[in-house]
Amino acid sequence: MNYATPEAKARMPGIHQAAQEAMGELRAARFVSFPDVGHVPHLEMPDRFKSELLAFLKS
Image (tube, rainbow, N blue to C red; front, side, top):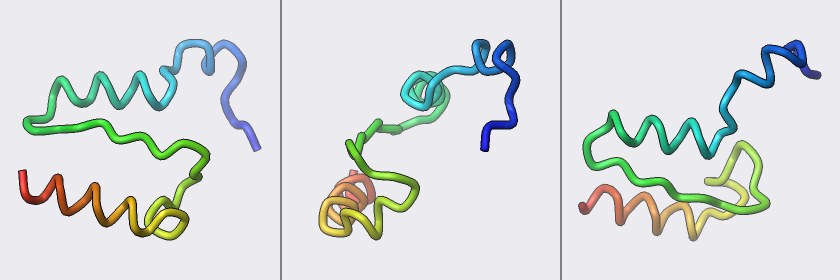
């Protein structure tokens, strides 16, 4: 279901753009993409998620 009007949607950044903008505000932020994964990467790609999370926590 899409609640945004076409006009509002045109003003909203895509998730990748929003993430890049947020990284500029967050110290030590990294952008990690999980192609073809939905809203639960920790369930859909648990090994990759764990690897990325541990690498971030160690940094």
